[in-house]
Amino acid sequence: MNSLSTGRPGFLAALGLAGVTALMLSCSASPAPTTMPPGPPASHQELARHYAPVVHQGAATDQDYITAIDFDGDWIGNNNWQNQLAGDLSAHVYYSVIETKTHWFLFYSLFHAWDYTDDLCEESDGCHENDLESVQVVVARDGTPFGRPVALETLAHGHIYLYTFDSAVKRGALRIRGRVTVEEGHPVVWVETYGHGIYGQRLRLRPSQVVYRPGDTAEVPEGIDDRDVSYRLMPIYDTLWEHRSEVGPGKAFDRLFDYRGRILPAAFDGDDYGADKANTPWGYNQETGDGVGRGDFFLDPARALVYHATFDGDFCLEYVHNPYLADLGLLRLSGDQQTA
Image (cartoon, rainbow, N blue to C red; front, side, top):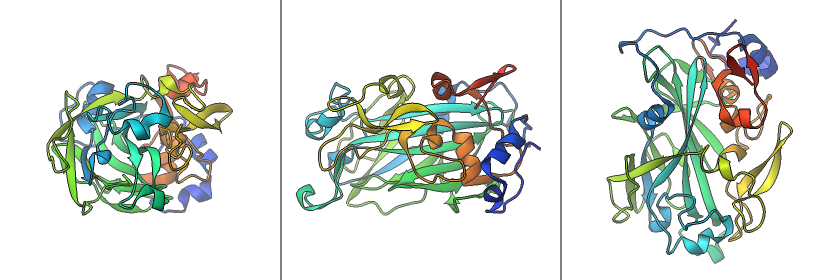
C-alpha cells in the first residue's frame, strides 16, 4: 500500500505512525491528471520563488516590518531588541525545500526583532525579543515542472493551521480552516500586527498593513501603509542552519533540545521581556503526537503531514532531498534514494 485515501480523522491515530511509515516506504509518484504540459521538475530555487507567499503584514510601527535575522550586522540574538531601532529593515524571507518521491515541502520563515503589544511592554506580558513565524506550502509532484499545490500550513501563537488548495486534502489531526487565496500563483497569507501570527484567511489588519511580494531586491517599506514591497528569499540551509552550533548567552541560539539523539537549539537567544521566547524553524513544538515530535514540522515534514492531514493519492515518506536529516546522520540510503 502506498497511499492514504481515507478521509477519516481518526485513521492515523488508529493505525499509529509507525504503521504508516512501514506501509509507505515503498511508494512511487503517480502523476495526477493535469492540464499543464509535462516537463522536468523546476529547480528548488525556482520552486521556492514560484510558491513564495504574498504577505499582508499588519503594521502599527516599523517593528512590524519583516527583516533579515542579521539585520544589525551580527548573529547575536540578545541585542536585537535595542538594535531594531537603528538596524537595516529591508525585507527578507527565509526558505527551505525538502523533497520526497511524491511531494515538495516549501517552508518559509518571517523574522521580526520585536514581538510586542499595543500596551507598554513594561505593563504587558505579551512582549519578547525576536520572533520567527513560519508557513509551509505542500506541492504534489504531478509530472509538470512546478507540480500542483495541495496544502498550506501556517503558524500562529503556538498552533499550526491547515488550509487546502483543493479537495485532495482532508483533515487528520488538524481540521481544515478553509481554502487558500492565490495571487498570480502565490498563496496569500495575513500576519497579525504586534504578535505576528500567520493565517491563511483574511484578517482585518489595524491600523494599517504592508504588502510584501517576492522579488529580486530586499526593500524597506516607505511607511506602514506601503502596499508594494519586494522581499528577498534567503535559504535557511545556508543561513540559520549554518549557525546552529552557536549556542549560549550572547550567541545566536539557546535552549537546547534532543531531536532523535541529536542536540539542537530550540530558540533564539533573547533576554528582553523574557528569555529565549522565539523558536528556531527546527524547534517548533506545535501540533505533535502519535509519533510526531518537536522539530518534525520542519525537519521531517512528510511524517508531520500524514499526522496533520489525509491526502488522496500517493503520499510517500521517502526523501529524495532532505539536507537537514542528512547533516544530522538521520537518513539512510535506499538504492538511489534517501529515507528517514
